[in-house]
Length: 365
Ligand SMILES: CSC[C@H]1O[C@H](OP(=O)(O)O)[C@H](O)[C@@H]1O
Image (cartoon, rainbow, N blue to C red; front, side):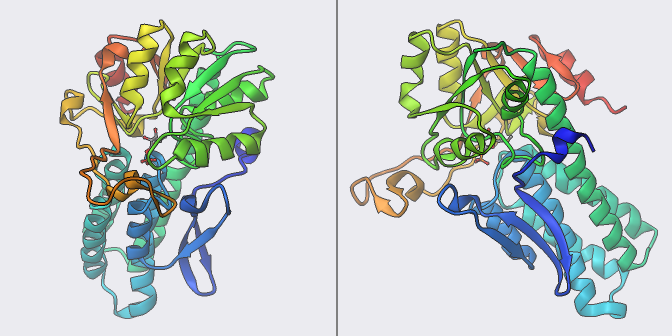
């Protein structure tokens, strides 16, 4: 493992198998930045609930969490039924839990990509009628491979993206796309971390990212852990700082990129892209292959998660709006490909037109 990977200090989710059996462990992101709380989940329903309630969030992180949730379900079943468990029964349970995980959040394609990858593994072994203990062991290996591959992808996106940064650059980012959202250094934050470690004196303007405040609560916390200089701003300040000439580039992540290069990402991203174009500021999207969905022709087909109105009308449980007002809370929006300067992937940086590059990037080795 590269030294940089070993130096990663924050982990969103991991697997443990202690005396009490298997557990999906995660850093509860709803408690940050006030408290660093680690949870040990022992039932697949708890894992699904954690994804739904954003205890763990971020496209690659929820994909890995769902994969671990599937492993947990089968490990728990094997521990309960022991020799009485058949391969067929184990696979039937796997399929049921896969549906539970699919129902957690609709937009980030990584969730479905990870579940499908785990299901291919389970189906192949079920056809061979392997021992349930072997099925559990192989699924855990597949989930860990998803984790390890994402960590490597993050590092590569970081190295490639850092080449776009010069000493002294001030950049802007939206939401959280770092170690809390992935299994490695992040997607859009990875180039900033790598550039910082290369000695480039970058400065990050962090959008607070209403309504769940992933920027204020998570990105500001993460960057501070790494000593990366930052300025926290409210989302409606981005245009002001662009007009001041402070911002050299915008780096954001993605939850789903379609075949033509349209990007679904945290609500507010589309507006940032329009502002960046208006100020002739490069707009970069960092995205691993696991977030690219070639089955969709354009962003018009991406399901957009509509979340609880209370996320808009309250902050930390304190109401900030009149009771009963109508509320809209789309968690994502779609940035059309023509507003994107480049897509930073682990297989290279793609420039418009994106379609051919994305097909090559997603082609199997
Ligand atoms: C690197 S994926 C991060 C991506 O996920 C975030 O959404 P959420 O916090 O709701 O999971 C946001 O869209 C980030 O860009």
